[in-house]
Image 1 (cartoon, one colour):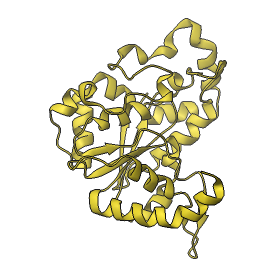
Image 2: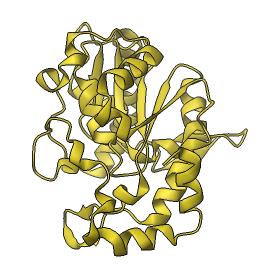
Image 3: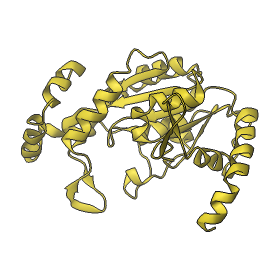
Length: 256
């Protein structure tokens, strides 16, 4: 479909999508955000196992194109992407809310509030930046996926929201090392029951493929993904991270 047709059909798509959202997804939607390579996709896969959650498998980038209303409040110009995703893959009757993951959601609390009021939840996942910056880019193995500067900027943005009533903060390391406690707390915040599906999430997950998995399917939680920065071969990259303004202070504030 060419761009002219897409533009012409957008109002109808938005109208129909809103009807579906109102009729089928009555509970507050869940948005996941955080610095890239911090476990945002893993968290989406875990929540996709819950029978009450319709997990959208692809990042929609809803806030990549912002406008501003008469009061100067930001809003998404591309909410049609959400409605198209909901129309393309209707959820099961048990799925009363949807979940969308885009790392930069963490920067757009105002746009979320402008669109949803207080009827949304934002989950911020944090990972030790020294491990985050070690990830190689899948299309260029010579390059790193996340810069130290990006980690500082993204995590600071999310950490500033930790007292917001619609925001839940969790740590990647806790998710890996104490899954039950961490996910039980998350489910409590989201007002979701923690049942068999969450206990055995890998068996029930519907989001199993994502480019973040670099060609593999989602797998069991791996303890060796924590603390890779301590290995001798990673010391140069770790030093570059620690020399980045604000990085060490933020690590300390976060308890690393």
